[in-house]
Length: 301
Image 1 (cartoon, helix red, strand yellow):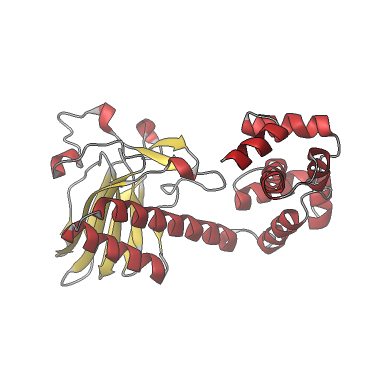
Image 2: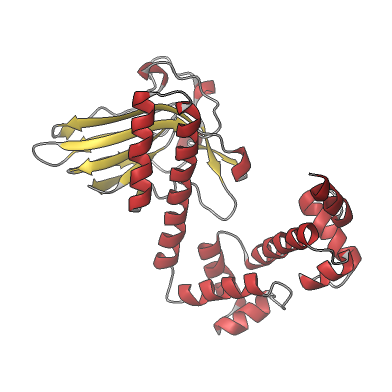
């Protein structure tokens, strides 16, 4: 069973401002050794192992999860969980969706009844720029701060004090951010021996976006051919070199337009676009409005 088989999980590129997770379930559970039923979910689950050891068969692989790790179980993907350790294993499970799009009232709304599948009910996984889907490499070792957020979310959801829905939403966003950062760190550590050099190049691009950052120049700095450099760069950054440079330049241009009184021409030069017409065209492609219109709007808001 391969990832995204049968169209699942359903992926939706979405900026972070559109992420609005709702929590459907958060609870500790202790289970004895054994293999559980094959199942699918309408929503998503983070299954954190507090004590013991577990395994999940998914995507045609068997993932082992030990205490201190969690597995991301995506909507619509068949999986089978197993408790491995004796005499038991303790879990904390959180069911949620990314866009507050599902109406979950009972467990039957979370777990698919294969005899009466409601295909319009499966949740959609949000995918942010620079990051891969969380479902791509589903096992995570969250940092202590993330584990504390997971435990706090379970407490809020269980006790349900006034405003708990808002607190749970905020906690879930923090948890997802930690997992995405863990993903980025893992990508860096798993990269080739050139990973550290590419990470350094990314920092240099951020520090000096106006410099010449063509593929040819980046390959020269890495002492490798352009195709190989571009492949490694995309593995680490999540996008091709040219797209990464463009995104950094655009981010810096927005900042300068908002926070300084520099002319539009000067802003363009500062971020690597000395031709004002080209700069305006590129900026409008990203924002839908010209640099001058963006400055006026940002100061009104």
